[in-house]
Image (cartoon, rainbow, N blue to C red; front, side, top):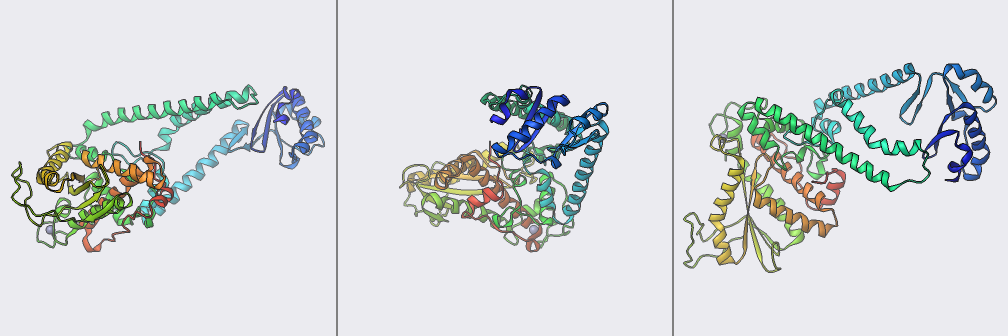
Length: 478
Ligand SMILES: [Zn+2]
């Protein structure tokens, strides 16, 4: 901008933020700068408002400042002024300004803690949205503990820009963008290393059962529900009881006011609730994921069917004794044109298991995924390949939200097809799928726990994919 580039401004250092001009330097230099602005500004559409302009000087320069700026209408202070969300002035002024800010933040957190009693999910999201919930945590940070790190990071990211201002560069150089990008990447990497360090320090101190639960909660997908805004119409909101139950399930804590006995007569425990067939809740849980998958598939594939019946057998024999040979055998979903050609039929079958159930507790989760995938494959794969000439994919989920490797590959393929179809970024669609499946499992888990007393919330709908990504601020997955 020509107004900025005039050489006789060299006595001062100045910076623009949109239409806000700031300059620093000797009083005589600033006085020349002021006159130039007042006389040249209007030709550039810049009309100086003296009543909104302030001169901040040290006490010993006050008299000279008053003399030089006499009649200009500019306010003069030795204390200080707010400037672009910060404060310039005496240490007392700056301290006072910071205290005010801190008091305001504290009052916000207090208000949020009141809201949290009735709306814990909303309050949680207001506090953490945009923070990353990895390593099985909740992403709840302690600002006083992080303040120094964040302050230094902020200096690091803005240093190249600050340097440009001090050197009074008049063109914006692309090297600034790349060095800022590099600084951000360095900070993210450093933060990650610090977290990994902290995690390896804490993990050995946890009791074995909690260690397993934290590793389950660290799986991809298991934290997706924590990172999205709680919008009910997209299926992303939990009422207060459900949110508290969800946290209890995530960390293996005992939820409040559970009945002593299940309606089936068995003693009521969380593990029992997750598996008890009375009331049909595990079936509902299974069906919700089945229907979500079918709905997403019908967006990108032909002939999507729920519970397709396999062709009756005519004496075919199969390698595994556990192969399903029933005439009326059904799978969960089938679709044409998912893996291969338009005419090739893909079959899917959903299996959800509770990795904290007593019988699975001592087995590594990765082995459980493999075991259930293998069981399903032995049951159906050969029959589908030989008789249906199709492909078979087992969709194995843990009740914590993680999924087996075959399901991961299938949902990635589905995300890629949906992203092309909808013109959405692949990483957003992958995240949306993870959020949707993780909410579906979570709502179902709460339903298993609370039965008919639970409010099920809106199931995820495919039509709202674009809106859900936008309004729910689904963070792209990496
Ligand atoms: Zn029961």
